[in-house]
Amino acid sequence: VALTSRSIIGNEARMAARRYFRRNQHEYAPRARSASSLLPSNTNLRSPTMEDATNLQSLLDTGSVVTGSPDELSKYNIDWKREYHGRSRILIRPKSTEEVSRVLSYCNRERIGVVPQAGNTGLVGGSVPIDDEIIVSVESMNTIHDFDETSGILTCEAGCVLQDLHAYAEERNHLIPIDLGAKGTCMIGGNVSTNAGGQYYYRFGSLHANVLGLEVALADGTCLDLCSTNRKDNTGYDMKHLFIGAEGTLGIITKINLSCPRLPSSRNAAFLALDTFDAVRRTLTMAKDELGECLAAFEFMDRAILELVGKQHRIPVSVDGGSELYPFYLLVETQGSNGGHDSEKMATFLERTMESGDVVV
Image (cartoon, rainbow, N blue to C red; front, side, top):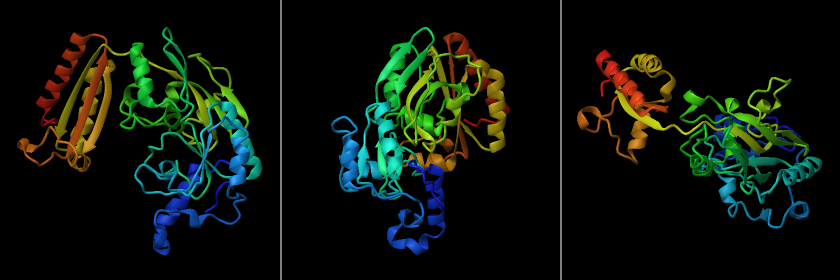
C-alpha cells in the first residue's frame, strides 16, 4: 500500500491501508484495527520528535502545541466508534490560517506526516492517525466573522461547531443548510471537507451548492484565498470545489463562506410505515407531486436500522402496537412560509398515500 510522500497523508491512502488490513487481519491479530504495520519503508516520511514539537511551538501562539502519550491524546487518536487507534504524541491547535500555514510548511520541509482533524465524528476512521503523525486540529479556530442578514451569507472559521452555527443563524431568522445527528460535536470545516449530506440534502442540495468561498492552506503551507460572498460568479475556474469533499487530502480548510436560507415559518413532519421497497419509491414520487416546493426531507430507514435505534429509544410505530417492526419507514418533512397552505398539502399527501395502500401506518 503506497502512501503519499506529501505532508498531508490522504484519507484515500489511509483507507486503502485499512482495507488491506481488514483482508489480512488474521496476520495482525495482536494489533487488530491498527494499520501502522502496513506503512511502507519508502514513504519518505519520518516520525516527529519532541524537538519538532518545540520548533513548532516557536512558530505558534502559546499553548497551541500539546504533547503526551497516545493515551493522553486518546480523544484525538481514537475514532468515534473506537475502532481505529493512532499513536500520535503531538497535537497542534492553530488559531489562524497563518499558523496552519506555518505548521504545514514546517512539516512539508521536514517530511513529517500530518492528519487534519475537526470534530472527529466520522465513522470510517479517516480523521485519526495511522501511526504517529502529527494531528492538526482546527478546534481553536471557532470565530464567526460576519453574517449578512440581507444576503444570508455567513463567514466563519473551520472549527465552529455545527450546532453553534445553527443557534447563531436561528437568532437571525436563518438556518444552516446542513443538519446532522452529530451537530453538537462536528465542525463545519469537517462537514465541508467530507461534503457531509444531512437530512435536508433533498431541499438544499450538497455543500457544493451552498459553500460560496473557502480559505485553504495547502500541504506546502501556501494559502489560497478563495473566499467570496458573490452568489453568482461564472468567471473562470471554481477552485473551491476541489476542496469540498476532498477530506483534507489537498489542504486544510480554515474559513468558509456559507449561504444560509431563511428560517421557515411553518414545518410539518410525518413518520410513515411501509411494507415494500416499491411502495417507498411510489411514495417518493407522490411526495414530489403533492408537496412540491415544500418538501424538505425524505429520509428512508429499514427494519434493521430501527431495531438498532430501538435498543436505546422507543419506536413510535410498530405492527399492531407490539414489538414487531414494519419492513420500511419514512420520515417526511415540509418547510414553508404559509402554515395553513403547507398543512393542507401535507394532509392531502397523507390521504393519498393511505388510499393507495402504500403507507400502512
